Image 1 (spheres, rainbow over the protein chains, first blue to last red):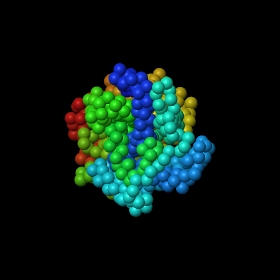
Image 2: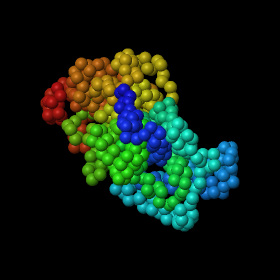
Image 3: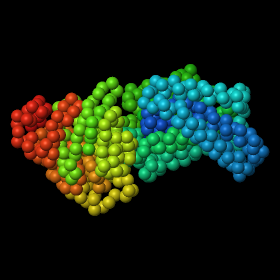
Length: 323
Length: 234
């Protein structure tokens, strides 16, 4: 099977196609904004696509991991306000590091709880999965109101990553550049794990045919739990990135972003991390370009993109061959 | 050895008291009409479907309740009817996954290359790009990449061209020298060429056991036990 470059090529093709409609500096700003948005969506969505591919679980509660991660990080960052506002990168990192760890750890623990208690009894039953995970998402949202209160919590960005860098006439937000960098690091790390390690080999095989992996002597349940927890941790990380992007945290943020995440997972091909990456970038770019060129179409741009891609490739950009 | 094995799939009662003994270091053919329960029998031994009653013994130990991965670790390998290859992985990656020790044993690999030269040729090819025969060769190569005590193979010749079936027969002759095999087959020519013992299933039960040579010599018995399925594949 040769590497299929066509979906990946769509990213530069769409970017170049937008160029005649937008002035150069604005195009650059929008492109970086779109890529940053795409990377953040990818971080949030990558765990979900793996969980679906490997475990065949429709997990609507994924949004809860995003929200809880954001709240955990917000608690740490607000407690370390001094370090956050100091104009020193070292001080900022001293606050961000623990915040990211707290976000990923809490989201991962919540993920473990969900897999054990909520999802395990409904393996193999999609309808029940939708019902219980949707219910779980609502319960977590309400619990967040109880623990953190119902109000939106403002979350200012660290001092050293606020503001913008001027490239020619284009103003590029520092935070967006950071988001692109973090997204790339996550993607490369996932790609290395999936393509260069035995664990990755097992995950890729498990996405295709779990029964055969078991027949070869591997306990797939342990792999399920590990991937679910790791995916939840990644959702927590994505939640922090998304909250800093919006500069606020609210209990409904996970549920709000789930629609886009599902679109990305479907566009990419259920279970495909590479497809999820390309799909997220496409969604980010298209949303930004359409939002600028034809604001009235902005709300429906993601749906339109999904429809067009599914008409072209009904199983997504990189379909995973499931047995 | 299976004794009084019953297997239910949902509301259907598929295996209805199967008694089957597979002699060591020989090849036992499991024959029967479509829907007789042959595949269910293999899947029940492999733990992929649970026996609702009866015992499945392997080396004296009851394995009927053991999880599938533990059975694989005991040395039981399974090649399903759909071959179960991982299409998105290369031939090498498929083999590597089956080598639970970690690395591939070069001497064993050379032996596999002799049995199936295509595996060497397509070593770095994605399994999804192989032909049907090559996929079957990969499925069997993967099952024997490490020494196994019992090989369960479901319809290895299904959909294969006659020339490839000939190569399969040669490969199975080699395989049965140092492993016990239980092979489900519809192709009577293949079964007759390789089988030492034979068991015939009908309606979820074993209705005949004996030597393959005795069944091959008795056309009336073949007709009675196997009927149309035999005619279709002779």
